Image 1 (cartoon, one colour):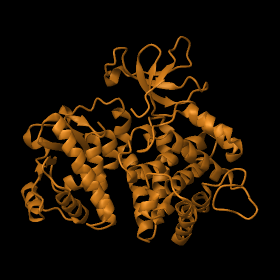
Image 2 (tube, one colour):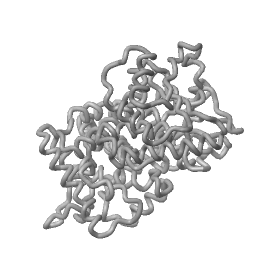
Image 3 (cartoon, helix red, strand yellow):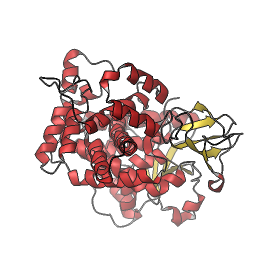
Image 4 (cartoon, one colour):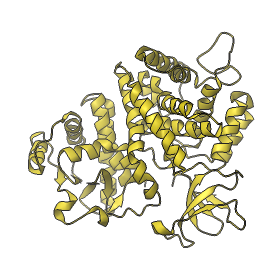
Length: 450
């Protein structure tokens, strides 16, 4: 069955974001509510339970004692609202309807001051016609602590210290697209600050975000795409030998490269089927729109403007926007263009399965004139055949997560997270292994979408 409880948490967060951007009756707000209610009904009926409890423990979303990593990354709206209400989470009744959920989105989007305790918060919900969402006490109030939450996820040790950075990435892109749609000034300093944080994160060699967050709805994968392109651009830029200050600029530019999509009508941007010729022309205006907004901000760097404008320009001078003489864009713009295409090919989407890096390389190399040779070389060097964050099964039956590419693109560095029987190892037993070492196992299988 499609969908899970993590998807429910993400839909709640997306609904609040959409309500902040639009209004109660907007199709995007209604869609989040409708999809949530439909998925909730299916999940609860399958388990024969009457409600869904989404807990909040020290800024993390949990369900059934499990840490929802991806939902926490994109769900800062939910955790912040729970903290404001002094609640330990939300218990949502199976009988809830979309109209009540929209009222919840509105309350979360518009409430700025703490009501003054849990009981006052409950009264606030009731006064706004929200009766089927009950606020849970803080976990400490009924004998449950963070220690009782199972955080033994194989990615937890890496994500714990990086959670604020990951949330900031999503928030920056989301805010930029919202401001673009509402013709507000872009917050360039926010993107620049996150770009600097991204560079620090990429320096640690920790598991990156590229394979940690699923895309349960259109808006999330659009935002997630820019986050992944930014992270990938920094990894590739470092492999190309770029200096730290350029990497910071590149990260910020990657986060904002698609900001012009905020100006594209939703029905075109998120059309599930193939675009017709007129719709294609509309989509192809987003680079110019993005560059214009960045120029209007007065504090965007020339690199950010160039990348927003040229990230769909081919190395041979083709692509869009059209130029009279087919001139080439800069090498840094070409680097982001290459990362943009690679991300689109290898990422999960609602309408397609993830493609392996090997298959993506094959497609890209068949069209050699489309990509800068230097950018392609740096991409392969940085990612190899297995992107950081990719989950894999090894030839000895153990499983793990790719930490970094190795000197041999077939043999990356891996953190072993599961034993031969598939049992999750304790944090102390998770070992980093360089598969290039003598007698080391090889990658036997990729767990795409895992």
